[in-house]
Amino acid sequence: MEMTETIILDAGWLFFAAWAMVLAAVSVIAFGREILGIHRETDVHGQQINH
Image (cartoon, rainbow, N blue to C red; front, side, top):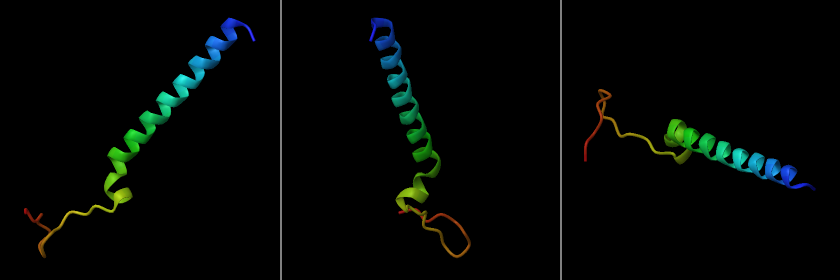
């Protein structure tokens, strides 16, 4: 494998890894409550309960 092919391959893997981390972060930000099962406590009228 030539040096340029190696550089392109490495750059591709780095881009893929960075893109995967961005997607994971956005997914956790957007769906974190559903994924982790965290729910806000509300009273009968739908108001948030502060502890």
